[in-house]
Amino acid sequence: MSLQKIDAKMLSKMFLAGAKNLENKKEWINELNVFPVPDGDTGTNMTMTIMSAAREVSALGETADMESICKAISSGSLRGARGNSGVILSQLFRGFTKRIKEEEVLTVAVLTDAFEKAVETAYKAVMKPKEGTILTVARGVADKAKELLEDGEDDMEAFLASVIEHAKYVLSQTPEMLPVLKQAGVVDSGGQGLVEVLSGAFDAYLGKEIDLTFTAPVSSDTGISRSASLEAQAEAEIKFGYCTEFIIMLNKTFNIKSEMDFKAYLESIGDSIVCVADDDVVKVHVHTNDPGLAIQKALKYGALSNLKIDNMRLEHQEKLFKMSEKEGATGGKVEEVKPQEPPKDFGFIAVSVGDGVNEIFRSLGVDYIIEGGQTMNPSTADILDAVEKVNAKTIFILPNNKNIILAANQAAELTTEKDLLVIPTKTIPQGITAVINFMPEQSADENEESMIQEIANVSTGQVTYAVRDTVIDDKEIKKGDYMGIGDKGILSVGASINEVAKETIAEMVTENSELISIYYGSDVTEEDAEAFREAVEEAHPSCDVELQYGGQPIYYYVMSVE
Image 1 (cartoon, rainbow, N blue to C red):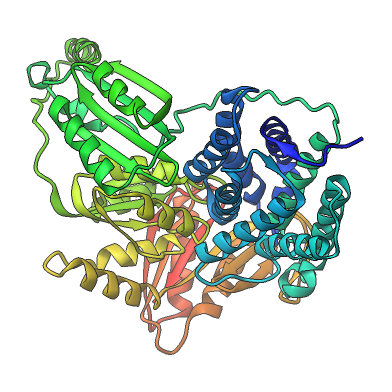
Image 2 (image 1 turned 180 degrees about the vertical axis):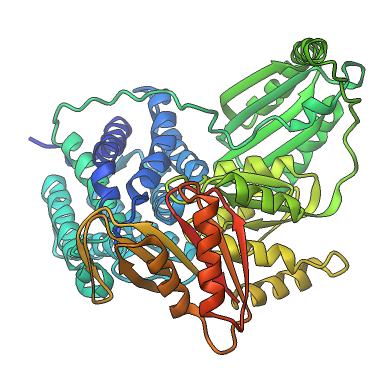
């Protein structure tokens, strides 16, 4: 006989099983990408998001209560959220756990309320919700749950089975809601990911044997990383010797007064303080001579996780030793280190990939580059880490990919120490245009407005290859074909990279176009790129044509028209 109520122990198993099932299906979900490009990443993004939470849940053990599990799910997925699908998934978890965290057991009625709260929270996080996506599948779950409750269904197994069956039905209908899915012959990949989470959770409820072990993350998932200023401190200038980082899993109210009091205490025992508070967690970074004092104070607010203490004096001695070795080998000179300077008014963070593109952003004054983009969407925690390293009062973030904008917005909401302004750049050329149009003498609001206006004038095209046969925008595409992808769809398909690239540009150029910029990738030689530039100049004599090395993978050319 199945359980009619879900307790904390069962919820933990169900969540971990859902995460595991998603991880097992991630490559298949990646392949559901509408465009048959070699960088489908929905499955990867959703998996990395849920795994960030799964590790925290797994670490709690079998005796954890409902509230602790909910905090681990909410905070872990929030920090680990990557890509639009990952951010939406984290918001679904956030809304769901808010409703159930004070319950001892979950009934059909409680789950119904929780599903509704999950959908409400996720829809609020998306500026322009689109139907035929993971949001639609989630809403279908909530609607079906409500219908079953109103019909008097109180058998938990029957309730869950019906809800998941309906989720699969709604998923099957997503191609009817989004024509591009129908043309490509796929269902929505984010919706498929959500169905896999629900299906895995239901398997655990039914008692199926599932391997619930989770490997440790490759890198710290705290969203807080030691400032690079360590490299710029002489031993004598290290006033506080221990870099201390941890996360507080809150078990009591942490309001603005609590946050101010806690920061004041940290300032009394150290410096280089970062304290980022969310609903359920507080991320802490402090340099101090007595980490135990910081830890004791933090324990008054809740349990600690991701504790990390480094002896900066020892690390600095090691750095000096290595630098002296290098000096002896090269005859060089150890550069004199300088203390941290006061924060400047404005700073820039850009998401970028390709050594050429990275160098372009640096030459334009970008302070910090987050390596990433397609297939490598940075998480909310990665962005928070970058924010810590930029010494500026106001920081402009350039996501340069439509799949990273939500994570950037989420990071902005979690940051209290600095003003973060997300410029919604969807492509590398838009990001470059935004930086070029920055005016240091203007206010942050004025710059934000002008940059957003300018990026709207940039059309972008990218050339890559197809990984499967499909039909999109009435264009038949075969595996191995080259494709020119514009802002709104496929612009060209063919067997020649340069011909596809030329046709893509021709589709973007208008009578008002003045500038064509070409960034050639790591798989294109300089000679081929130069020949392509000459062909574009000949085809569009009224436009200035600029060619630059981008070094980006996967995309042979990234091109913009302004």
